[in-house]
Length: 232
Image (cartoon, rainbow, N blue to C red):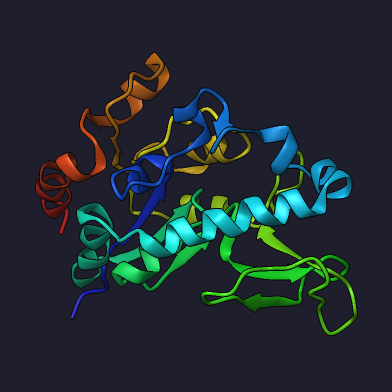
């Protein structure tokens, strides 16, 4: 039996938008009427911990109510044909709930908390919220397991390495504008077939390099399926 080809899929907010999860870019730079600087930076955490915890607790509730969509299930189904590695900018768990087995979260996971003094102490929250006063085993306040704006992206090197070893590479639902994540394309080998599934317009350098399916994630998956299956 021949080894499955390595399919690396890089996903952004657009794939979760079809599940009803709004992004700050859709809201004029706001998340649920909050400025990013007030809820998604370390400075905000220091300034107003209660506000930051409340904001992420509410977002967690929204994600618990959301359901994976056809694009999430499509990627899980592709595991029957390829060795699929998902790299996502999203903090939700919709890929996992749809059945994807290999998911690397670049910007953290909203369904988890971590110690504010030891990044290796990470806890599954389930349906729980994080309250001011909830502490890790070392006695420090728990914070959302999120990479805030201005913080390093610890998994970026691992993501770039996965991209470099891809036999096939797909981008779904991202503007490719946010760095360092957008730089992942620079690590994909030039001859590796690449696709972009997103309704937006992108720069000429991307249009030349990627086969662009100009649809939303859910609407474009059948066209993408046909393209990918040519490479079995």
